[in-house]
Length: 461
Ligand code: NDP
Image (cartoon, rainbow, N blue to C red):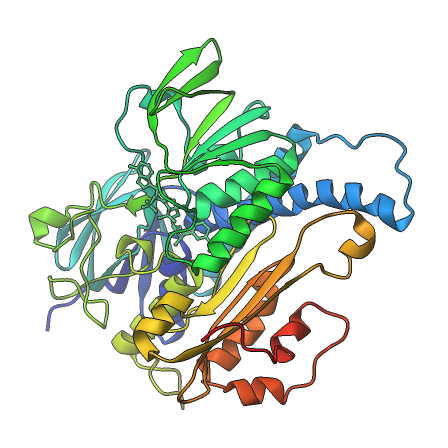
């Protein structure tokens, strides 16, 4: 049998790569990981974590405003210190980068810096600016290089920014135009509006957040608009031009928008450049996503891929779960445990719009397709806090039940802490609990979450 330097060589130090490297090493494998940038990948550096920190920052604006209804008197108008927020974020992200480095050291994973390129099914070349090029052999190679923002071609493309740039903008944008109605577009629109920008969100389709439950989409758009985000549907950008340091955005149909920053949030593509995939014969899809089987094996034996670079569900917890399933497959499960398999059903997710969305299971439309007869229970209401806060924001809760089995097959919420609340209910939906079991659960009063166990009236079938 061939002798390799490593049992597993991981290319990419993001959520999936780090988790695979660490767990493989814990099973006794000899593991190396190469990363060209800072450890932690998109999630830690320019994704989930800084986004959530900025979302917290943005929520203070509402809190200051609403606190008056509860008797607080603020000495003056609160103002955001953008530089202070950026530097607090940068400090926290550096701390996390260090923790990720520490995880590698602690697990005895060899951490290499540089750009990794596959030169055959069992060898990776690492090019490092200072150290030159080194060659490493491995029994298994894992590609976990993630994704990067996609920006379509149009006149003025060089004048726009992507989510990678948003956290460190040199000057806070007084006016922001966001293009794209997906997760990133909607979150950034809400966050920067909360931080004090005038925000227009331009989306080419009928309603933002395609793929989510239609009622959730409508409700979220209405709440965002009520907060002051200018959502423009059924329109697209024709061109962007510079007006000094500002931008003029020409929409199809002749309307123009003035902005300090134009953010394109038009999806992400797998990060596969310079990996040597085509020379090696690693099969990729139309957008570059690496094609893998149920065990994350690519078309080249010995080479595996997971996370955003395979583009199944671009979510950190999905990459983590995929990594643990791969480690079980390659090196066996932890002592006494059964091998984990990846199951893509009932994966909960949140969109950190203001108010946020939490969702698990099927949309109403999909439930009708899958189950035929369904019962929909929904309620929208003014949360207790807003009886005094002065805010007109409402909360939506919605259950979709398969009529034949009584199982809750879809659960959706738009409202404060929706992500926190739906995470808990996701366990129930995953376990196939019935509406009768939801009804038998006593609520926690007074909360918004109790609505999920007190919905008695069928809204529609
Ligand atoms: P999404 O795929 O969610 O949204 C992309 C948006 O851009 C859609 O509205 C899409 O329109 C639009 N679009 C695509 N191409 C064009 C084009 N050529 N011109 C105009 N509009 C276009 O991608 P995001 O970049 O928002 O996010 C990427 C992924 O990252 C998400 O799918 C999600 O998995 C993950 N993510 C998760 C988060 C979370 O868990 N909270 C937060 C942020 C990201 P259309 O709908 O018509 O195709």
